[in-house]
Image 1: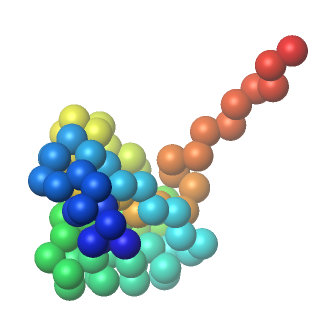
Image 2: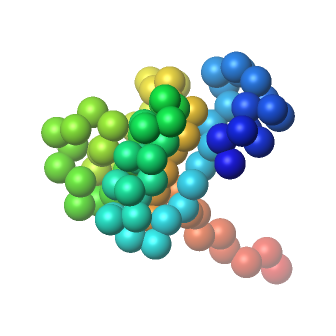
Amino acid sequence: MTSVVDARFGDDSHIKVIIRCDSRAEISQMVDVLVGRGESVLGVHERFSGKDPIRLHSVPSVDSRTERYWVHQFKFLVAAAPIH
């Protein structure tokens, strides 16, 4: 996945890749894998304590963070009202 992102977007720091996982444990695992590959990553889940600077319990302002990969469970889903 990271090689595809790098090939397509290069070093463009404005690009954010959003990854949705099924659980808090999967978010932590994905964060660890990406960190291990030298990627900048942020995990967001309501049950994270917020004490770890890359595992937050609430969504920060996009402009305040430089991480390329943002990993979440439900935090970035938006419910849209049906259009009539």
